[in-house]
Length: 175
Image (cartoon, rainbow, N blue to C red; front, side, top):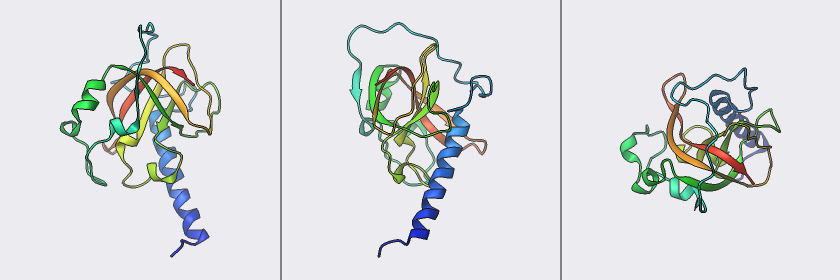
């Protein structure tokens, strides 16, 4: 049975509200002076570009064996994910929309632009919080982008203590 227009609209509103909550808690789209600093994650310092190419990774490389609504535990990290920690990578995805369209210093990179990535029971490994290095910014695009930077396993929790994200990227460049 095909969902009605009202059901689809209500579902989209729930997903948008969930996404906005993630954006607000991550500080994405806020002017620098209004953003709350995450104590465990100081502003990213510019780092010299490493020689050689970054490792091309996908969200499949970041996937974990977690069931819906199952709490995250660091023991669930795969050897592949732990090997990527602090490595220079290039990851393709979509910039989660926010109120700011250009000059983004922070944003959430998601696996795809469909409704599957946010809302109740969304997979934690389908989003990466990107914090651009000093002096670098990005512009919103509806098209997929490739972000180059240093990958980190960095847990971001909401006020209720639940995980909102478990990965971050110190962004050097967005193509």
